[in-house]
Length: 445
Image (cartoon, rainbow, N blue to C red; front, side, top):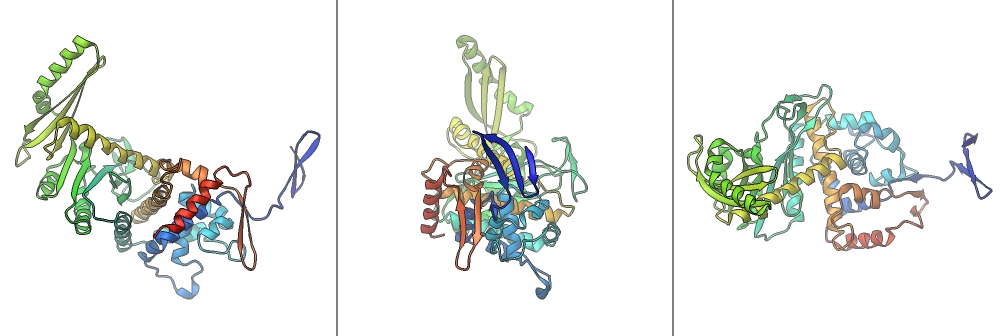
């Protein structure tokens, strides 16, 4: 490649024709598909409602970027793969991002800078965060209209490695790292996130779980009277306080992983011997289930334990869950408890595709705000998938949706009457894009 001048580049020739590139293409973006997310945001008033949860102590005459613009700028940047505020230096002039933030692509000033966005994140208070958490739950209720017969709540915790001087970052012995320990709750059927709570790094998995659950159940029972609620969680949440509270609610069932101990292993021993004997006779993997009553010393009553015993060429594998369900043991384990693993897939999307573990602010409250912003960006994709039902991308992961529908190159220009977005003539998903936009326009929102 040879540089001809500052505004022109010459590449290797093709078929005896010179290949020349210049920088005269106009305002071009690689994120034109983000306008779809803007359409979703407008339809559900997502960023508008989120911005209304935040206080703004700034003097109005001196404000260049209002709260709504800042929320939109940050939210759409995260959704499109720019999780770091430092990216604002490159995105401030991007025409697609300006449109998504509610600004004209050419005539409006640049979007906010990195220092402005950092100050925005660090201004949040505990009241702001509480209102945002309530807003997330209200959005869930809006997008899941009643009446409903069954609601499934999946609660899980995840590690968020920390680097630097983040407040309340501590070493966790189980994960063997300095970290935060977020607590997340998802709808087990739809995958919608109902809660995202940041916790100090040395917190036990169950810390604060009961308080979060009480808050959610109060609103859910009011919104869906008569619905049966199933609570699922792994063994990190196997604590008496949770059992006792859930058992007092006549319309709540639970199935929670149970930490293996010598006593439950002893009670399941006959089933293990049976599985071993059948494996030796057939040479095929054996998978058997049973249930029994068990009372730990810290419990005020006995509870039902379901045991799953597998025996293969690698030996025995045993798992236990505690539940107040009276259904068949295999049904409870395979058709209810195991499906809890879908919550882990949602967490992977949050962390890997939306970088929800990029909580690198110094203030703990600012990092909780970031976690909620990343969760809100996930909701945008949840809503996008909702309107993709019946298409090839109905169950696509966040990264796939971003690559195929959002990362679209386009030239954007502004005239006196219109804002033109010129997409590539060869864009392979043009029909799907047109159908999706029509679907969005026809939805009630």
